[in-house]
Length: 348
Image (cartoon, rainbow, N blue to C red; front, side, top):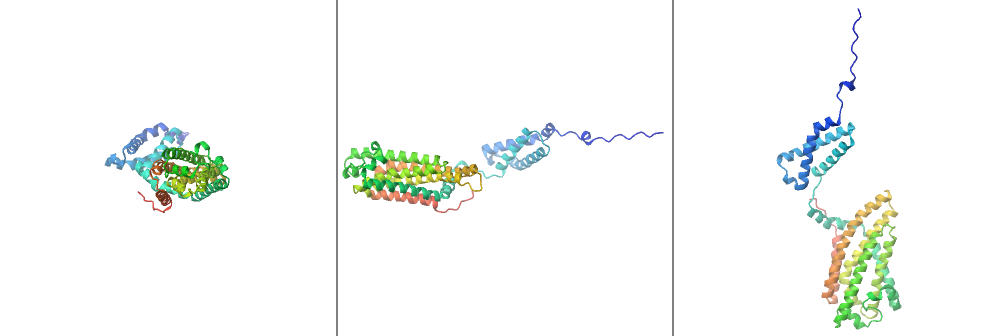
């Protein structure tokens, strides 16, 4: 008599229930929703708005979400669910472990640390640009001092406000706030001051914007920045008014020209990164340099605003030359100390 055949073994694939996205979501979705709600509350109202129980639940739900993400990756669940869990986990990481700052603290950190650090990092480029500006001023000063007709090649006649080689010393002095011709003084001062500030601001922004072209346009523009300054200085120097003109310019020029040098340095930093990327890819090096240069340019805009206030009010209200030099020197010392004096960053 034959014995009955043993039943065939059941395949594991058939015996074990299939792992499905629907079942996985049904078992764990409540934790994800609770975690998402806590994160939203934390983002909107801060940790102070959470109860004691919610504070205790937060790390537990975070670990549960990470566990779900690990299982989802190992079992190759659908991409939509995987993306949702990854986003929720990253969001939770920054809110649970990240250092959260208020807007006021971020602004404070920028002015105390980020902006000065960015300026210090481009000190070599700043020196180069400053020398280029000085070279431009020396070039035009030399040409106009020996051949005054060169002046009109550098400064448009309609913008000079009568300050050209044909003007008398008395008239030139009156435009600086020392003469008795009040109408001429106000007209010449206002027209040329507006032209000079607008010109320097435009050149500063262009110097930064064109830095990506290997830094060449930046250096050319900064050289041009000094041209008009040197030509005007030559006119006043030839009339024996170089000291007075220096005071008229110094009260705001130390801030404005410093800003111009920094804008050129920011553009040159980007151009240098494009030409010499080092071990990084060219695009990556330019992007990294752009973040530093962007911080510098935020500061440049603020410096130009300060220069505009000094130009619009201080220079016209303060007519004593020595005091003008004093204010300009104090502003220069302030900027140098603000940028280059070492400071220890607090961890708060």
